[in-house]
Length: 538
Image (tube, rainbow, N blue to C red; front, top):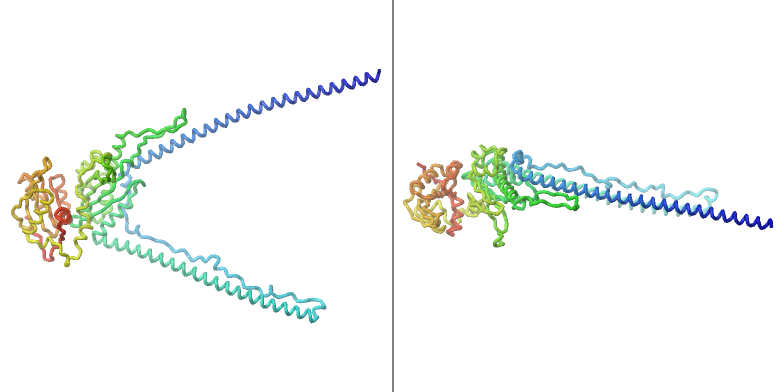
């Protein structure tokens, strides 16, 4: 009986222990679940915070990108609006700055300068035998044989070292010769380039036409424009009248950005563009065209210290496609002729470029963005020096007529024929005292046509302004709508200034040669005899 109570008591104790363990496990499980729930909630909070942080960083990046794009856009517009103003501080090209200077680095042979040490004979010598057995004949013989093998190996190593050293010396010599050759070539190239600069400077100071044009090309080449501007041009110089004709390639309308700005919408997370008003783009483009004309003229006059250029004609063209025909077109959007004296009176830091061109009586397109052309003051092809050069070759052997050798009547017939070919109805009058021709012509076109007075001067030297005044007087006396003065030489600044704004056209010798070739099919040349004397103008 006592034993059963003991067993029962033990069993109850085990049961209580089991229940305690179960409770402990349950509490541990509940605690673990609580911790797991807490960890999951913490993870979700962390994820939310991380996503929010990522979103915040994304918004900041988008906002920064929009600000950067707007800054770039503003910088571009500022650059376009300041094309003229920014150029006023540019310094003209100096001949000394065109020269190249470079020092040749000292010869550096590198590892070739380090000679390999010769073989050490001690390292080849076999160890001598020691002890009593060194006296044995066999040992002595083995040592002698070893010494012989050592000698042969050493001599072979010496030969290999000598060959390697000879090769090193050869490579060192070749490297030194190559360095000296490159140094000599560099020095020769520098000397040749600097000699060309000296020659150009000498020719420029002497006033040669080619050097004047080359220098003007350098001035325009080094004028810094935005990278997407064509910066292409052609120059022609008429030494008789000191007139420089510039045909400049203008950028297209697309140079004005169509985007007015960038915005970031937080609600959609997208970057949007705002369009720049078309009227604003057109106004900007007109300003760019006007600034480039004034800037180019100013750069040439500013750089031309000796005063070789007294008059500049600037024709600004643009390459484009005719939207109606799909064919390439090259309209002139601005055409200006101005003298140094007139231009130096301008304060370019204060002018409105478009208004300034109008004050200079320039032809400016009514709508440059729509490629509405203007008539060039002077076509570049009529003064292209290459044309004159072609007509000046083989002077004595040339079978083309020399206009200076024609009789007054022949020259009169030639000019009459020319303007007939150009579409005018000509009527000859009495020949002028200088052997040229005076002719009254009629332009049959309605509205634009009318009576035209044509006078010609076979001159060797520059035609004086009095001839231009006489022509203007004749135009008034004859009731003509226009006067044309054709000369075998050229005109001075005073002539162009007098003719400016008047119904007068001044054609130089190069113009005449071009017109004869283009319209009358006559290839001629102009070579006054050495004893030629121009008539004295009354």
